[in-house]
Amino acid sequence: MPTLPNTDSLFRPFELKSLKLKNRIVMAPMTRVFSPEGIPGPDVAAYYRRRAENEVGLILSEGTVVDRPASRNEAGIPFFHGADALAGWADVINGVHAAGGKMGPQIWHTGATRGMFGWTPEAPVESPSGLNAPGDPNGVAMSDEDIADTIAAFAKAAADAKRLGFDVVEIHGAHGYLIDQFFWHATNQRDDRYGGASLKERSRFAAEVVAATRAAVGPDYPLLMRLSQWKQQDFEVRLATTPGEMEDWLMPLKDAGVDIFHCSQRRFWEPEFPEIDGEEGLNFAGWAKKLTGAATISVGSVGLSGEFMAAFGGETSSPVGLDGLVRRMEAGEFDLIAVGRAILGDPQWVTKIRTGSADDLKAFDPASLAELV
Image 1 (cartoon, rainbow, N blue to C red):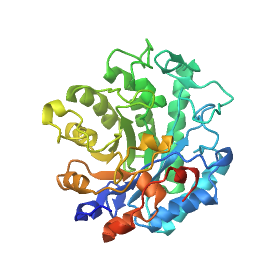
Image 2: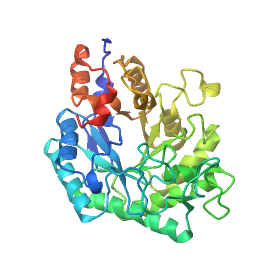
Image 3: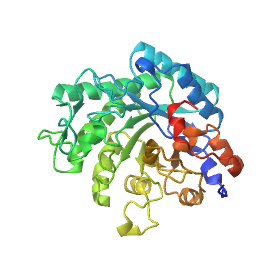
Image 4: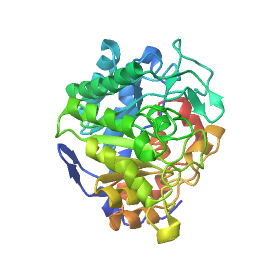
């Protein structure tokens, strides 16, 4: 088992607008597909409550889809719309709050991506240009009306999150799903105002989603957005190849109302622009914070030896030390750290880190993906 460093930097409080966290550790959003008919049940509520009981600073839910005919690509993905689903989410947040936790839903539209298990929605899937990836057509290109209705659906979901008592809301703009398909030139071939040759131009749809969401929740409610360079369709893709391009991408989103950028990497320790600041340079979250001044969350294979996509191929991961994470946190490179599989497989992971119980840390078993531990 690894030796744990002094982790005090992970357990400093964090405050932003109405959000007050007891530590810097975030449960990363992870798709679980355990919500029949889109409705989260008592098992889902208990799953999140266990993390709140074990000191997770901020819980971000699995992706929950907005009210569009084909906004999800798996049958068990939960809705964040409709009376029954929202009643289920009310039970979730009430349980988390009763355990002393903080939580926000991640609101999502899967766009033209395909699910892993062969399920397809009844309505045609929608995306900027009817493309899942280069040379991979799927579904239909969105009309102006489709775009307007989708923007409104994100805003409505966020308003419902605030009404139900969630502490924050996060917009999913990463990993090759709908919003990210607008960012990516390979899947956004539009010649209207939602397309364009530059990343800044292709950020218009996302900025309008953010602005509508901000208007729906008001100025003091914390709004997060998850972003990534990589896509599930192509791990090597980079939207922004220079700091200037990254600034052009992120600043319109900040100006529209994003408070915290959740910067997804497959490995959090990898530098974003090593040609500028070397192999120990700032990661994605570090550069996002430097360029925009916004708070950031880093994420990517925290506490485990293998990266998360390998888990879907059945690869186990062993616990590893947190020295690199602590060093970056102490330097103020980013503000919060999201932990995925380590917390998915062990609800007590945060408590074990705080108490220095390294011998009790668990390896990640991909079998835990098939149950709500």
